Image 1 (cartoon, rainbow, N blue to C red):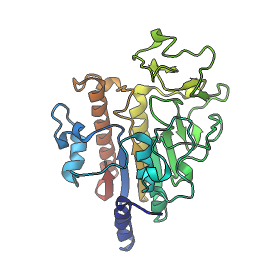
Image 2 (cartoon, rainbow, N blue to C red; image 1 turned 90 degrees about the vertical axis):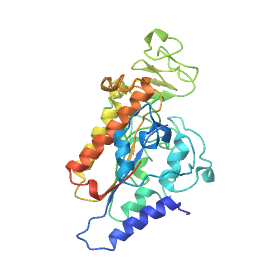
Image 3 (cartoon, rainbow, N blue to C red; image 1 turned 135 degrees about the horizontal axis):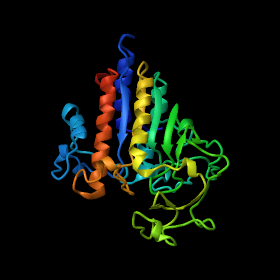
Image 4 (cartoon, helix red, strand yellow; image 1 turned 30 degrees about the horizontal axis):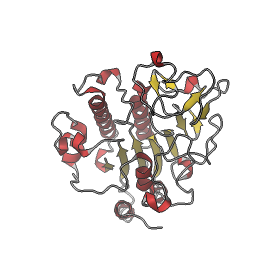
Length: 320
C-alpha cells in the first residue's frame, strides 16, 4: 500500500520519539478538519473582513504552509485521502456520499489511526465523518458496523454524513446517540414517508429557505437532503452542534491526557446549513457564513485552552 508524504512525515516524528527515553512521552496528534473553509477565509492568510485569532495563533506559533495540493476539493474523497494516504480516484472514491452509503475504507486497509495505534496511541474521531457506514443497508436502530471503530478508531462520536443530510443524529461507537427504541428511525433518499413534512410541501415550517436539492425532510426548521422518519429524541439541534462536538473533544482530551492520543476533529463549519449558535449570530457582520467561521475559530481556541489547562499544548502536534 502506497502511503503519501504527509503520513510518512507524521510517522517519522512518532518513530523518532519512540526511540528516545521512555520518560519522553510521544507527542499527541490532532487533525482539525474544517468543511468548506478556504485559506482566504483566515486572517493569517490575508482575510481582511473577518478575524480568526485562534487559527492565526496556530499559524503564527507553528509552521504556516503557503503552498499545497488537494487530493480532492470535496467532502468524502478528501477525507478518504486524509485517513488512508491514498488518492481517492485510485479506489473510485470521487463522489460525495449520501448518508446511507456503505463504508468506503476497507477494514483491512492501513489508516492513520491504525498506524498510530501500533505505536501505543489512543485514537478518536469526533465530528463529521462522511466516509460511509455499514454495508449499504444500515439499520439505524441497531449497532452500525463497520464504521470508524473498524478502521482504527478506539472512540467515535460522529454524524454520518453532512449537516444538511439525513440522518440528523449523532452516532457514538456505532450506536445512535439518545436512540429511543419506541421511535425507530427510517431513512430513504428516494421517496418520502407518508405524512412527513418536507421543504417542498410545508414551506411554512421552514426557518431557512429550501432550494431544489435541500427540500426534503425538515428538522429544526431546516430542510434536508433525503427523507427521515422517527428518532425524535436523537435528532440534533443544529445551533448546538459546535458545542456538542467541542464538549466531546474536551472530555476526550481530559480523560486521555496520561497517554499519547490521536484525535481527528471534524468541524462542520462553514458547510451549509450555516446555523451559528445565538452567541455568534451577527458576530462578523458578514452573515451566517462569516458567523460560523467565527464560531469555528472559537472552538479551536477552546481546544487550545483545554490543551493548556491539561499541560499538553507543548507536546501536541496540531494540523489545521
